[in-house]
Length: 198
Image 1 (cartoon, rainbow, N blue to C red):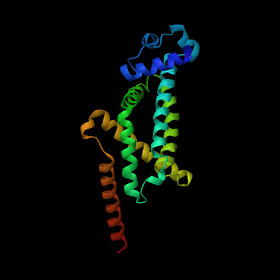
Image 2: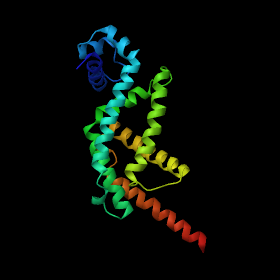
Image 3: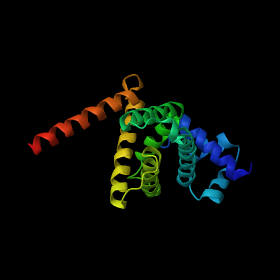
Image 4: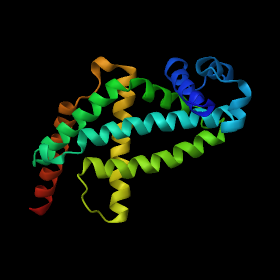
């Protein structure tokens, strides 16, 4: 590997071990074996390098998620059971990649202090929302406005689930508990709908 790749590997290691806000340029240099000047030469700033490291780590997670959900044929037709099994897979992947998500939440805390971080997360959030629709709805064709709304919903659900796993893994949601909640909400909506039609 060259210095550019070494820096990226070192930055990812620092993100997992120290988090975004506590990682210094010298930490990255020590973890990568590169020199301080190479950060500026290859990435411009430490923040740009850390953003690239988060982006690569999230892309690795996304590729694993795609692989886990790629064979939609093995998921049942019942939409709530399908929802449960899909989210069970998502949560299993999160458990394996917990340091990635902890680093991401740490980076989000810097949004008001580092404009490049906000720009990165605005773009990443939009891509994630679109990707989640494709992965979790099995490629269903939706009108653009609906696709955005569903993407925002899934992303809100994903962020909330991951926050709970970071804070308290023992009591965090499971695919089963999320499906139970969804089933309850759907039944409540149906009851309300049937009452209105009387």
